[in-house]
Image (cartoon, rainbow, N blue to C red):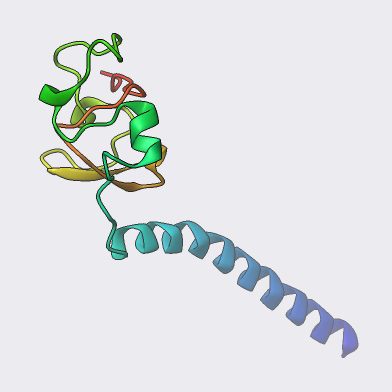
Length: 112
């Protein structure tokens, strides 16, 4: 009887561990989407360091000569908003929202 109970307890434990492991990524995704996020402050220290602007027309090309016309957050690999979103999370700015028409020196082309 003890062996049967031990086997059932072990099986139940393994099921709970598997369910918990599967729930972690889902919870992280839901929490990221469910929590209101703030827009990046272009005057903030991190934004200043990366040259972030809400509008590519405001890029300081003398300070950030890597900027090329056509680059903007919406076509950056790091932009996590959906196509057509005006704002989207960016991991550079701790998942705060960046403007789709914004830019920073961390811009990386999305793969084709």
